[in-house]
Amino acid sequence: MKLHILSAVIIAAFLAAGCGKKGAPADQPFVYARAADARKLDPAVANDDQSAKVLNNICEGLVRFKSGSTEVEPCLAETWSFSSDGRTCIFALREGVKFHDGTPLNADTVAWNFNRQMSTNAPGYFPDVGSALCDDLESVRVLDALRLEFRLKRPNAALLPNLATVSASLISPRSLADYGEGLQRRPVGTGPFKLREWLPNERIVLEASPEYWGQKPKTERVVFTVVPNNSARFLQLQTGQVHAMDGLDPNDLAPVRADKSLTLLEAPGINLAYLAFNCRKPPMDKLEFRQAVAMAVQKPALIEAIYRGAAVAANCALPPALRPADAKPEDWPRDLDRARNLIAQLQIVLRPITVSTNDAFGLPITFTTNVIEHVELPPLTIHVTTSPSSCLPSPPRAAELIKADLEAIGLKIRIVARERAAHLASVRNGEHDLALTCRVGRNGDPGNFLDILDPQAARAGTGANISFLDDFQLAAALNEGREQLDPAKRASIYARVLALAHERLPILPLAYAHDTVALRRNVHGFVLQPTLEVRLAPVKLE
Image 1 (cartoon, rainbow, N blue to C red):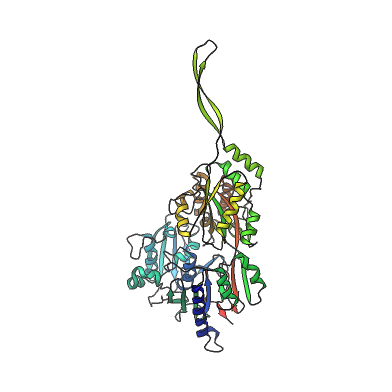
Image 2 (image 1 turned 60 degrees about the vertical axis):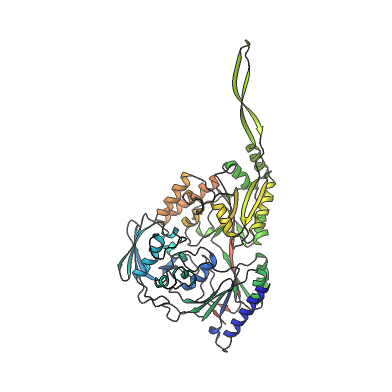
């Protein structure tokens, strides 16, 4: 509680300082409240939502998503062109752009940014640099001061969407010389805002960059404040101490709608909450077991209890915004009797025995036969994080509901709840039987989203696929979809992937959650982005 009071005092001081000049709302800082702080403000290593929200305003990439869309548009690159085989793309950079430290943007600085992710020997490479972005990159070659060539190992239809994500944002090479690994706390980009102050677990303050090449920010200062307790965060919004908050508790949606001083932004999200089966372990390796679980879980009850209606039941591995038009998703009907029968069949085991006896002539004979035994299934675990997210607001509570559903068909279930980092480590290493988790789309591309099904992404310790189903047909179809550049053919491939996923059932889709942000009524220009980016340059207070 002391931390919450201190945060409120600090925020009030910021607001008072900003209101010193009458009739100058641009001088008033815009305060955005969230549940947790950023971790690392280096695009190459930032792998959490809170870091991305800040970096969206400091750093930029070659391309970006159009506001409110997953369509790609120019940013630091003005134009680009692909070769006929889809393996080469030449980018032409915007002229006259500078990083916040005065370093000019040119082909060399862009190449430096990608080389530090591609090679362990490159300057600026750190052990936790995210390499997924560059897995398909063969080389980045400077052609002249403002042009460079990206050469791919194979065609990749998601190259441009990948380059629009925060992981592909650029930083000044000089920041490495100035700060070393400390650049993870001192990002130097080309964006509309630059970092002014970072007090860990308290606040991050950004100020408008006067030399910004694009449309100037409508607010001089932005404060990202940390208020872990949702009720305290919501109270600060209601009393005007902050102007916006995310991470809304579903129970607070109705009060926001009823409060005339507030505005609720709500839209279907590009996300999926799902139950992953560890297909390397029995009985999860049996399709009949997975089908029984699918027919036992009550999705409508989950939607109401966990999301308070701010979600829809999921019927396939892709949310509607990414789904091919010709996909025909099927859901598993709830059928407890059939589910119990499937579990009962799995508990029947034929055990071979050797029988010694005499034949009709009294001669000794020995033969092998099978006897039927009933074997209880062992207690199973559901691994879940204790950390709420927009996709899964109350993970332990959701796990309890699923546990009750599975116990109703005769299974014994134990919940293993851990904080986010420990949870991810355990499920990526395959310690779970079942795992309740979620997937959030960052680049608006179905191939990227469906990594959760890809056998190639089932790498112990690092992969996105925690069901570990080794299915050749799924792997081949997903690989074909990545390389197919024709949109119609690609859509047909992903429709086939969804049908295979329903048939093989490595995961049970549960819910597509709505994205929500609550604002004060005097906030204008804030757009809820489908990729969950937080762009504050267009925002102004009135």
